Image (tube, rainbow, N blue to C red; front, side, top):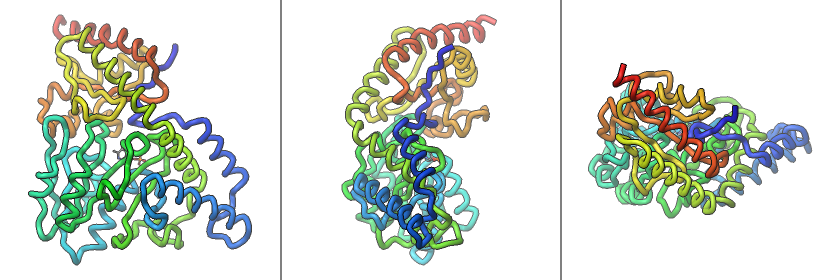
Length: 384
Ligand SMILES: *Cc1c(COP(=O)(O)O)cnc(C)c1O
């Protein structure tokens, strides 16, 4: 049976050129970048070249980028590292209810350690408002962490405006850009961002590699202890193949960004229009326009998202319910609930995240199979 992949927000297939670049570095450039000999120096050059390429993409300085083991570590380091290192400035963190668990669980950890955390609610589209951020800031606020694009709904937050608020009030601003980096333009200067997390495996790069941007002058407590790598902030021998893969993947995404965004927006809209035409009682969760190209989170009334996911899997179609991290867990998505979507509707939601594996033909297959399966599941639950 042919397999159809519609779960690009969970992870992606590594690009062939990225895999080739990684294989080459693993075989030919295997020195330890901290070694003084020629092998080490060659590896060091490769890392610093990669850092420079990535810095240019973000309009950052090379001294402001730290390579990490992925988005999770970048988020953990941003929140905990900044709050702990800046304890003299205050103990208040502002974040939101729609964040990824890499941020939410770091915030919980800080709360358990005596910090104060405000969790902002989104509007009905899953968007966080700059006014709400401004209202929540107190003299004790150190950091605001609001994600750029939500991984479940694809809604794009107004981070430039949020960054303006934090800049005016002299508090730091972190954004989790794991879902937007490589897909939407990001300029940390223009967007007023102080810290930013990104990951390779959501953009056709390898799993286990990411980066954290930290604006110069910001104090950050290290989360690892050992050697002196990454300016003592992220110690441990650098993952050179991962770093090369991350930067190669990012470069390819940046080259194709506008054409791929247009292509995926068309496919995304074709899918949602098709579902609306063939089914009743379906709802799009997330902002109708200010949404990631390629992402549709849809609620199907009267059925369980989990049942639909399993039925689609049997037809070779891969989708997800809520976030991948919470599947296996029957409760409705924390993101959809925080948007005010009733639990029974939130439970019937599916995320279709389109990407390079998809073209019109695969969307049309989806449009043929989904209505059949939904109608059958609805008959079972109502007719039975
Ligand atoms: C996937 C994801 C992460 C985690 O990144 P990893 O590299 O898998 O650790 C964090 N935030 C968001 C929004 C994500 O989608």
